[in-house]
Amino acid sequence: MYFVFVLADKAWAGSNLIYKWQKSLGNYIAVGGQDNSVKIFDRHGHKSTELNLPGRCVGMDWDKDGDILAVIAAKSSSIYLWDASVNKTSQIDSSMRDQMSFVLWSKTGPVLAVGTVKGNLLIYNQQTSRKIPVLGKHTKKITCGCWSTQNLLALGSEDSTLSISNHEGDTIRQTTLRGEPAEIYFSVMKTDERSAQGESTVSVSVDKKILMLFNVNDPENRIELTFQRRYGNIVSYRWYGDGYILIGFSHGYFVVISTHIREIGEELYQAHNHKDSLNSVAISVALNKAASCGDNSIKIHELSELKEISNIFRLEDETKGLDQLSWTDDGQLLAVSTQKGTLHVFLTKLPLLCDSFGTRLAYLTSLLEVTVSNQVEGETPVTIELEVEPTFIAVGPYHLAVGMNNRAWFYALVDQEPGVCGKLIPTNRPSCHISVFYSVR
Image 1 (cartoon, rainbow, N blue to C red):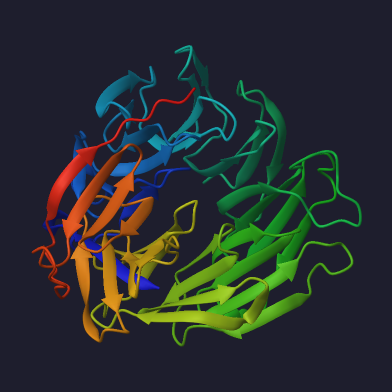
Image 2 (cartoon, rainbow, N blue to C red):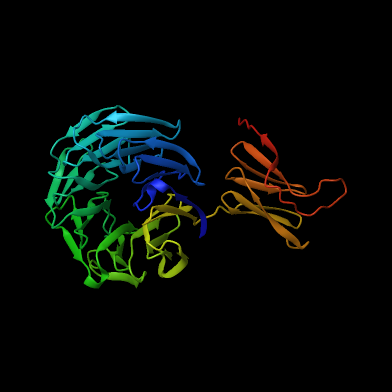
């Protein structure tokens, strides 16, 4: 794991950041602090644009393809949409008088769910511009929720209830909880035979002490799991694999359970991952890895063998502690926010790009960096900073070439006098830039 960049802003100081990686592509990260804006950065830490809001950002989400970012703000009943493909912001009037509190795109289509501080719900279809207001979905602020792959919407509210609705907002199920809900997910419980009913299980953290499993098709037989007091409160949890749940607890514990009915309630793995506190857990399906952050360190586990910690990274300067973890969908980048309002981004997966010419070797050492070495000739390796994140590289007697799509950049490496075999010279500037166009029959 390598450090890539850190994002900091005076306006963010001392605040807990809200941030979201662009889905699918992971080319952008949107960040909101206590100032009235959302700043959007590319995956190299360069600011692309800024959305000015009437109040601080209280929620955001990317649509399933990563094309549209939806943002809601305090002191506003509008929804702000940023189109990544054309860098354009639009504003949607919710037609509701109360402020927005929750926003989430569907997993399957261009449908947006927006909850309000008074418990009302708006279903907005981006493709048709159709709005479906649902008044009184809950009696208090809607705080959390999740869409299923079957397009059901689960919502949790400060009124200590859980509702399950269809894509038009009609209530299918509703149940009372023993406390306020947090972190709702749809998933499939582990069974001897794979269910044909899809994501029929809703999990929800209740009062930070109970993990409740609610079967949409069997609402009377819900399961409530409690844990040892020494673990502290449930901070965060994630489903993974064939019906397993990884749970992080406030006192630094990291626990894995199975949802198979014969194993339910049993801890398959438990570790005291952080000495004083744990703040967040994250899972990368692409890497088959789990991460937890607490105190001022991040620990990376192999999901296939949880006892194996592949990386530990300490942020010594973050004396106030860490906050939230989030991976890009491809697992390449891991972001962690801190209690003092900064965002650190790490490279956890690097594409294997390399080429050779004779005894010279060129290989990718960071997203925007290639190292060229010649160990046989005893030359000192040189590092070349790139203009773009390449998808292919090539090295020759005098140049390094990198490229993406139909464009290539060439960097001079050695003295190019005829008949002279020069040593490696880092230029960090392309000696030429060529656009190459391909026609395919």
